[in-house]
Structures are given as structure tokens and as C-alpha cells.
Amino acid sequence: MTCLSRLAFAILLAAAPAIAESPASPAAPASPASPASPSAPAEPQTVTGRFTTATEVKPILTATKSSWIAIREYDGQDLLYVTQIWSWRCGLVAMRVAVNGGAPEPWDLPPCHENTAQPNAITDDDGLPFRSYPLGSLQSVLVELFYDDRTTDSATFTRPQVLMP
Image 1 (cartoon, one colour):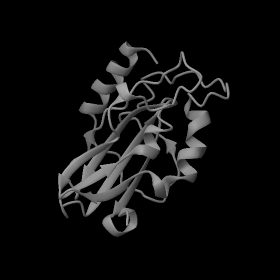
Image 2 (image 1 turned 60 degrees about the vertical axis):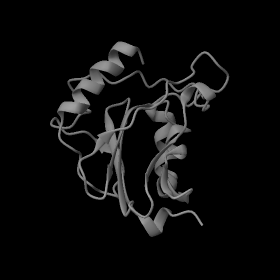
Image 3 (image 1 turned 120 degrees about the vertical axis):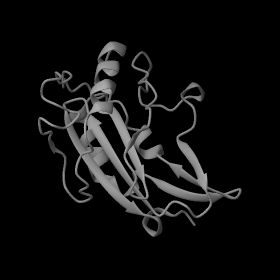
Image 4 (image 1 turned 30 degrees about the horizontal axis):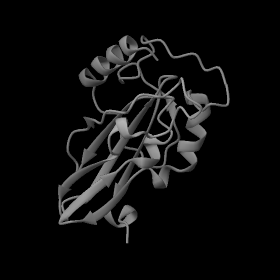
């Protein structure tokens, strides 16, 4: 996906209402009111075996939905990890996260490394796949994924479901 199309989609995403919370629902075509509007063209879905399209990564992310995030108590903070999502981010155009019933906010995804043997690898330049919050403050987390075929998926997690021992 080009930088221009990612920017255009990010603008659509910021202006659109949140998608419905539905932790158990499979990905479905987006409604015209959602950020993944049919008016924005879908990316080509040519299967290459490199896991860079929604067609290739959606089955993996759907099967591992219960592992999309993790919460870890560390050094007096709650750390919210999105490592599973980052590991299959090629095929996604955006991700939003809402904490404790708040409004979903964009969470930038690192670029796909399409000129390498492992496009979904997380490199040192990508940053770290977590955010810090005050200790004990994360009680629920909504994750919304927007695929490059213009479908969406979401899940809501409670602290006990995703708290690492």
C-alpha cells in the first residue's frame, strides 16, 4: 500500500464513527458508514504466500483473536501489548484501540517490509508493540482492525482474559 493511500485511509478512519463492538463476530464487509468504506478502493488480493494481503492474514488473525493483545504488569505500570497484531500487520490498513469504554483511538502500525524475506517482521526501527498505562488501570480493551480488502473485525477483552502471569 502506498503512503498516499495509507494517508487517505487514515483521514477516513479519523472522521468515521467507531465500528460496532462484537468480540465474537467474524469479519464482515464494511458498511458504507464505516471507515473501510467501499468508496475507498480495496487493495489487490493476489495471494503470494508472503502474508501481505487481507486474504492471507485475515484467517490467521481470526483464528488467533483471543491472543490479539496482552496486558502485563511491569515496573509499576500496565503494559498493553499488540505483538500478535503487529506480527500479521501486512494486510491491515489501520488499527484502533479503546481503553475502558473510551473512544477508539488510532494505533499506528509499522510499515510492511515488502522488500525483505519477512515483510511482517518487527524490526528495531518499528518501535515497540506496547503502550504504558497506570498500574491496574486497564480493565477492558476494544481492538478494531481494518483490512486492506475494506473489511473489519473487532474484539473486546477484559483484564482477566489477557493479563499475563
